[in-house]
Structure formats: structure tokens, C-alpha cells
Image 1 (tube, rainbow, N blue to C red):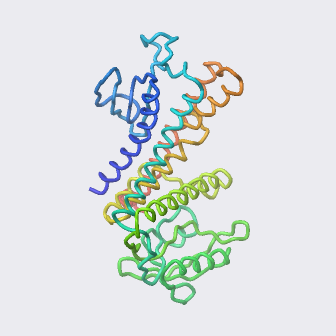
Image 2: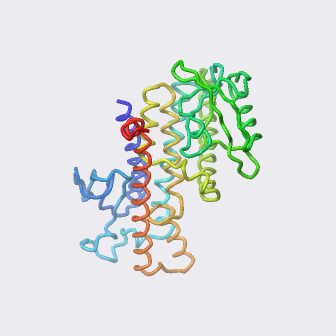
Image 3: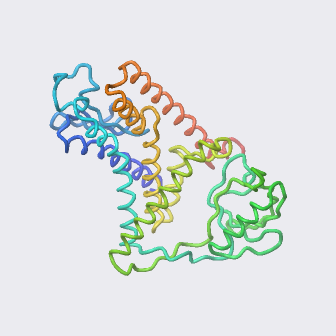
Length: 362
């Protein structure tokens, strides 16, 4: 059930993204010919008012299609309701609407969390610091730390609980580049001693692990609707800022951060784990993935919304579109990049699943 829940959330986020494009177009009277979830061959379809609604075989996203893209379309080329015949600002709204829809969904989900679960009020923390994630091939993984471990002591000193304990542990790690630290970790009632040597990166210790307070998030009842709205807005802004920062780090420090990039398999695995936990975890998961989808699509890369917006911006500056062959080459290169990256991430994430590692004898 956890995997099905995670898949349903991902599918829902794709539908919301494409619905943003769809409704921005139809609201402006622009002709739409198709609404697809997935790529490739059609598995299921239904036609309504001349629009094909389809579920396709390759679950790597979705798209809204227009008669402009169909060489066999019966719509006259000079039809004023074709997307290409609309002013730049109308086409820009159609392109941007998917990103805006995902950001709005994230805010709405966090709003629902505040209304039905409550306002975050810190952690009901126990002693120790939780290892929430470990990047392959880095210091934490080399020391034997795995996601779900609880670090209970460092250099013989007990680790307290709460956010302060995380900050102190991170500070200790950053201040110990290339210096071996002795840790004690606990998992499923079993304690073990580990030797952790943070890598030295620009004179700062790095271990490639995500740390958070051990324990569950505590919530309180909101004081009123305005507090719920303010909290949702703050959390949406903070998550968006962190997500953008992560993408910037991927570009500026690719060698260190590339191994932390996850594909659909890892995302589903994380979502399934959170689904088993229940409670507020799925609210945050849904909001975070929705924001990631928004930021990813805003990147000025071929086939993504940001890439199409870039072509639109160039058209506005030139006063006319780029030649069709250049636009086609730009978009086709994006498709190959997207499929190639997805395959690599799926293989990488699948190989790291516990069942697969056990099969391979790791």
C-alpha cells in the first residue's frame, strides 16, 4: 500500500502540472488536442470535445499537445486560436502555468496540514540524531552508516536530542576534516561502533549524510485561519528556497552533489516509507516533490517548460521565432537527455534497493 500511495501522489502531481497548462490554454480559448500522462504508446484513452485524454506506457512525466504540433491537423494554419498565433504573453502564461500549478498545490497541501494536523511545534525528541539519508560513495557510507541509524555518541560523549543536537553534531563534523571520529550508532536495538572520517572539502568536513532530530514532529492547534495561511506561506517559501539552492549546488559543485540526485525509483521508495509512517509525513513529501517538480520544469533546458520559455524570450528579443529546424533540434536533444538521465537514475536507484543489494551479495 505504501508504494501504491507514493505512485498515486507522483501521478497526481504530474496531472496537476499538466492541468495547469491545459486550463491556462482553454481559459484563453486556445485550441488543445491532447492531455497525456506519460510518454510513448497509448495504454488508455478517451476523447472529449476533440481532445484526447491518454495514459501512456512510459511514466516519466506528461504533456499537453496542441494542433500546432500535428502536421496532419485539419485546423487552418491561420486560425487565431492556435497557440502559435497568440501573443507572447498568452503563450507565456500557458508555458508557466504548470510550474505555478505545482507551487500552488504545494502551498495548498501545507495549508491542509496546518488546518488538519496543526502548526509545527518542534520535535518530541529523544536522545540521539537520526541519519535520514546517506549518499553512496561518501564518508558516511564508507563508515557503515545507513538511513535509519541513530547516532547516540561521538568520541565517547552522549549525543543529546532535538535540533540543537543536530547543529552540534554538524558543527563537530565540519570542524574535523580528514580527522577520524569514533561514533556509536543504534538501529533496531543493536548498537555498533563506527569510525567516521569526514572528507575535507575547502577545509570543511563533509560526510554525505542527511541528519535530523530523532523523534517525531510535534504539532499544536492553530490559533486561527491567518496563522495557518502564514505558516503555509513561510513553509512553501522555505522549501522553494532550499530546492533552488540544491539545484544551484548541483551546477556549481557537481562532483560532490551528483551522487545525491535521485530518480523515480528512489522517490517512490521514500514515499512508501513515509506512507507507512502516516500522519504529517505525506503532507511534507507531497509538497516537497511538487516544489521540486516546479523548480525542475522551470530550468531553461530543452523539453522542459523553462526551455520553451527561453525560446519564447528569444522570439520576443528577435521579433520573430527561431528557425523551425533549430527549435526541433533543441527539443529533440532534450528528449534524449531526459530519457537517458531517467534510465541512469532508475538503474542507480534500483541497484541500491535493499532487496537488490542482497541479491547481488552486498
